Length: 240
Image 1 (cartoon, helix red, strand yellow):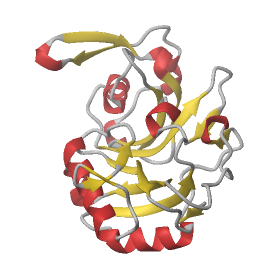
Image 2 (cartoon, one colour):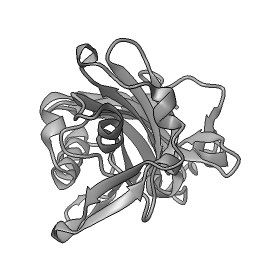
Image 3 (cartoon, rainbow, N blue to C red):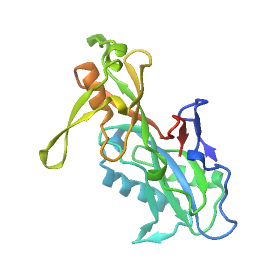
């Protein structure tokens, strides 16, 4: 695996939900590249569909031997990040017609990046390797807020047995979700910064700013998605 940097260093984080990172592609035939991008500035303003178009454009411009489907490089994508968020964990799997060395792939895709995207990692995975969607169920977020405006005690907030948070569904219907079982960890990280590790999945998804807003009593200043993980039943975190 070739990386520009490590998103989070922790002994509790293992690799790929139990799948070996060293499992290689076959010498010939289809292979996939697992790419991790950051998005900053203008890229943070994109919707999920606009981001898919942008990442397909980067893959096309890179000129790697990609399998083409529907006129585009064949790609699959990780969970959508909310419009307006910056991120260091935007994943895309690119299907290749033949293996390419990770360093070569990293350098080639990096040169093609534009519009607020930067490649942070490129890793070869077998064609049958599980998708990002199948390998993640929680996200790590860095939330910014104005420290001068004050902040309630986190200990009291996390001691609550239930933290009901209202969310608006499609069509304007309101739904109340208990945020407490979704919070893996929540702690202050320096002046005006909150680290929030939040579970997600069918029927139990909340935007991190809604959790932060429930704690602060006001909307936070910004959200950065730092990483995505799979949390196993015994609480271990696995990077995809």
